[in-house]
Amino acid sequence: MTVGIDDISIYIPRLFVDARDFAVARGMDPDKLQRGLGISKMAMVDTNQDPACMAANACLRIMQKSHLSPKDIGRLYVATESSLDESKAMNSYVIGMLEQIYGDDSFEHCGGIECKFACVSGSYALYDNSNWIRAGESGGKSAIVVVSDIAKYDLGSSGEYTQGAGAVAMLVNDNPRLLEFDPKVTSTSIKNEYDFYRPFGKETPIVHGQYSNLLYLLQVKKALMLYKEKALSTGLIKLKAGETILDYIDFLSMHLPYSNMGKKALAYLLRHEWRKLPRWKKIIEKIGMEEPIPKDPRGTIESVLADSEFMTKDHEFTKKFSKTEEFQEVYDTKLASSLIASQMIGNLYTASLYLGFRSCLEFEFQKGTDLAGKRFGFGSYGSGSSAMVFSGAIKPTYKEIVKDMNLESEIGNRVKLSLEEYEEIHENKRGPKENFLDSKEEFVLIDVENIAESKGERRYVFTG
Ligand code: COA
Image 1: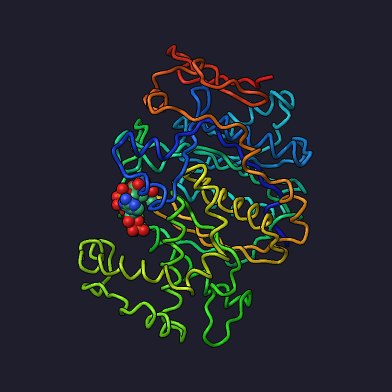
Image 2: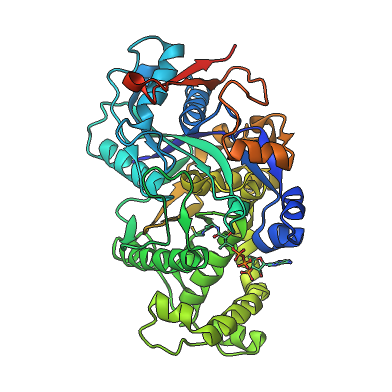
């Protein structure tokens, strides 16, 4: 049975912090953010925005764009790591907001939950909803999967320059106009880790950034190896001598905590896939050094990170590899377009992968690339930690959806925050009603109850 993404919509807050202003304020070289990490702007929520209203705004946009009524929707899932409550699921707030537009109880037939596994939960939510449709349980209805997050780190920490906010809503059904998932190849890896986590009651995460970067690469590689086995055994991909599975993936969307992480992941996966192929010999000659090997043959993440000589040489090797024309060609044709939105918006945690997918569609379409039938590979990673690799093919009808994509107009007029204003928002010094921007035709938060019997109840309105 065909299942896939029929339509996609985004909601990105209009406030932003400029990476150059930020770097100057923190005494950093602006080039580190712009060239080193690939960050030019970080979207910030206003005082009257939260992950639930961003999710509801993205949902409303997809409902209106695809002319849907609540009866067309059988499930509404929200995947997030910016949970508002230990018990009440974020999709219930979203349903409440949508019912302000579509009428009381208009979504009461609809099921759904909030999903959590750091930045990978959106991929699990898509997979589970696809399987709900494959199982014949949907009764012809579609599912909406919304990924929504605020990436927030401590002031002055090394994570602070990888912040951002936004939501992506995806309509999943059995007659998708955009992308059809490849069946029986979705692959996962999982391990109990503490690379990034946010204990109860803490608003910002505890992060071991370099550890997390390496774990991301290892976990995605493991999931890719399993994907490869499945793609070959199901006959989805047939390899000839000297080929790799990545030769058959036309475009890649990777999890993007910052845009250059996509490039790092591509280099790592290509090295892994190419090193046993005849083409590697020529590349090694061009690079002019052998690929370094860690001292500890077990290759555990701890031993690799502790092996500083290996890490330095490996970093040098990766840099040289990334400059080869073989790497550049793959980078330019398969990945670069997916990184543009991340540079403009920043980190969206669970939504980052899907903003990257959206970015690739928009910017490849603008280049005039014919995407019909092209295979997209997705490399999803969530700290804690789990990875998921899956793929899908673009449908011939994709232009119906992609022709109207325009990130800049969909975000609207963006407003730059001064560093003082940014810090006021970051440190929660302003209440929901002390917002910076007037909003039009969108859901905003107006109040959070503080009295004991209704503490934490949140009220939202749709602005006229
Ligand atoms: N000009 C140009 N580039 C510069 C530079 C300068 N002046 N100074 C540093 N850089 C480059 C570095 O070479 C490096 O690039 P490379 O790895 O390709 O060589 C890049 O900028 C980042 O520098 P680094 O020193 O590694 O950054 P950091 O220690 O400040 O931390 C993160 C970066 C991403 C680990 C940190 O921001 C973080 O923890 N973020 C949150 C968690 C996260 O994103 N985890 C990722 C996995 S999900």
